Every structure is written in structure tokens, then in C-alpha cells.
Amino acid sequence: MKLMEQVRRVLRVKHYALATERGYCQWIVRYIHFHGIKHPNTLGAAEVEQFLTHLATTDKVAASTQNQALNALVFLYRDVLRMELGDFDAVRARRPVRVPVVMTVHEVRQLLAGLSRLETTEPYHLMAQVMYGSGLRLMECCRLRVKDIDLARGQLTVRGGKGDKDRYVMVPATAHAGLQRMLDWRRTLHEQDLARGQGRVEMPTALERKLPGADHQLGWQFLFASSKLSRCPRTGQVGRHHVHQGCLQRAINVVVRKLAWTKRVTCHTLRHSFATHLLEMGQDIRTVQELLGHNDVRTTMIYTHVMQKAASRVRSPLDAAT
Image (cartoon, rainbow, N blue to C red; front, side, top):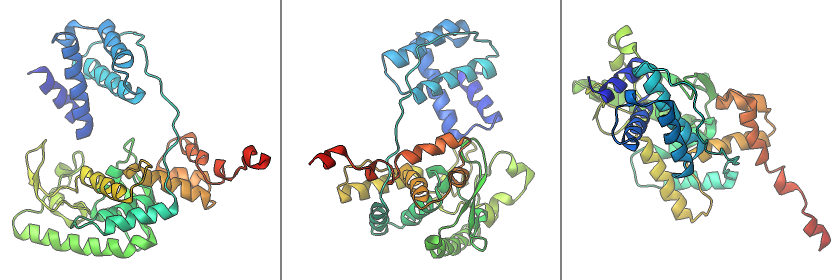
């Protein structure tokens, strides 16, 4: 079996995400080419250190990028080749301290209004409402399934979020009617798919084997479904996947350009704005931490630096002197 086939096989046995699989494979191939297309089992800690140092000093990659490359190579040697790397001391990329970009409430309204005016059948406006109103990450929103929406209790269940953790978040009252319409539309679409002999959806981990037939049940269908059927790149089976995350990203970019903002706004800015606005409304930081799914409250505390009651409300000495 070829090396990259082995890598993909082990990644899938260990249930790594498709995005992680693609990222790890790219880094392993890049590592092999960096050392003149030599097999990794002829290389070791010194070559790994050389590659990581090159990334930091020559390519000047971000710390997170270098860490991903390191994780990919550790996985290759530990889990695929069954080799001990030993100790090495590569030059590490510096991790800068950044404050998040946050929109004002008025800017959020402008962005949502702009999304609602886009000429598209995709539910970008509702997805943005849910991301801002519930603090979801982009992929957490895309991967919501019908069974995860509980309008009676007013909560969403985020399954397999960052770190493979589940959590509950609130349903924004403003998005309640839109979500109900989406659920009704999703039921109709699923019935049409079943009538055409389709209606299959990819199941997480081994649930397709443990729950026979569940992949054709309405509850497991993605809420924000793609308008077209597609073939799974892993299994090759045809089904209805969720809206591609890149489509929502492009839609937000289009609206931001139309608004002529100089502020860099992305999908994740909605999550940053959710956390900051909750803190400005007086919500305690522990609750915000739980809603965001952060392991450590220190991660959540970054939003205290961009609250309006911080720098923007302190009077400058220049104003006092003039």
C-alpha cells in the first residue's frame, strides 16, 4: 500500500474530519518534497526540525500553521510509520496577541439586511442570524441537523463542535419563525428526495452501521441543505449535503463590499460580536464561556478588551488638555 493511502486509511480509522485529512496529507506531501522526495522512514527528528524551522524563518508562516504541520508529521511517524521521532528543537513561529474584530449592533443589522436582499435561494440570511444570535462557528451552523433544533425549548444542540464537544445554545427569538419555515421546507424537500429514491445523508462516525436506516430519516438530515445532490468524497455515495461553507463566506463578502466597510468582517466576526455584545449587556463571563464552548475562561476574556465600556469610554488626556 502506498504511503499516502496508508495515511488516509489511518486518518479515517481514527475518525479525523475530512478537512483535517486534507490538511495533514498536504503537509506530509510538502515535507516529502522539501527533502527531495525521500521516504519519511529514511528521515527523522533532524529533518522534521529543519522543515519546521524553514516554515518559520523562510516562509514566515503563522504559529497555528506551523503547529498544524507539526501535528501532521507527528501523526505520520507515530500512527502510520510507528516510529519514535525523539526530541527536536525547531524555531517556532511567534504567536501574536490579536484582539478580535467586532461589529456594532447597527452594523450587524446592516449586514443581516444586506444578506436578506441578496438574490439567492440559499438561506444565508437565516444562517447569519443563527450564527450571531447563538454564537455558532461557521461549520457548527452548516452542520446543524433537523433533530438538533428544539423550538419548543428554545435551544439548539451543537454536536461535535471544536474539540468534538457538544453544547446547548439558545434559539434567537427573532430567528424562531425563520427556523420553523426552514424545518417545514426541509421536510418537504426530504419527502421529494425519498420519492425519487434518494434522501440519504452522511452520518457521523459509525452511526450508519449502528442505526440502520437512520441515514434516510428526516431527523438526521442537514437543516441548511444544499440545493443539489452530491457524491461523498470518502464513501462515493450520493446524498444531500449541507450548504457549502464557502458560499456563505462569499455572500458575506459581497454584502461587506456593497456596504463599503473598511472593517474586515467574516463569518467568524458574527461569533466575536455575539460574545462581546452579551458581555456589554451585562451577561456574566462564565455563561458566555459555556455558550461559546471554550475550555478556559481566559479564552473568553479576550472579548473584555473590545467592550465599549473599555477603551472607547475612557477620556483621552488630549481632550482634557484642549
